[in-house]
Length: 97
Image 1 (spheres, one colour):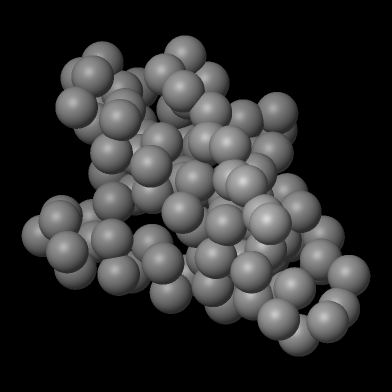
Image 2 (spheres, rainbow, N blue to C red):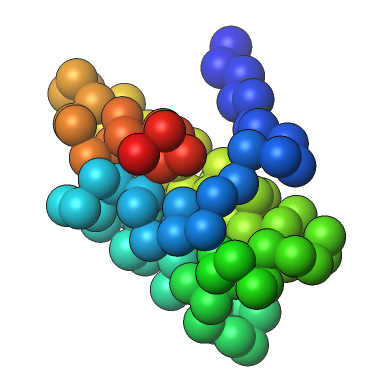
């Protein structure tokens, strides 16, 4: 069994969605961010600015998207039977950058 634990409010910092993947995004990261933007009808990367993160709604949406993005990247790596790439591992650590 696999369990995913997503961080809660207070873990976000301005630019954290932009840092997913550590500068070399995993294809799942790019794909998920584009899908989230399509579903929401807004560029998801606009939700990680300091101004946007003043809104609890924007924070919650951005955190869910970041968690799903990291989970998908890890899932893709696991399905390929490879050790998770640096970009994939850094997806869940974007806050620490």
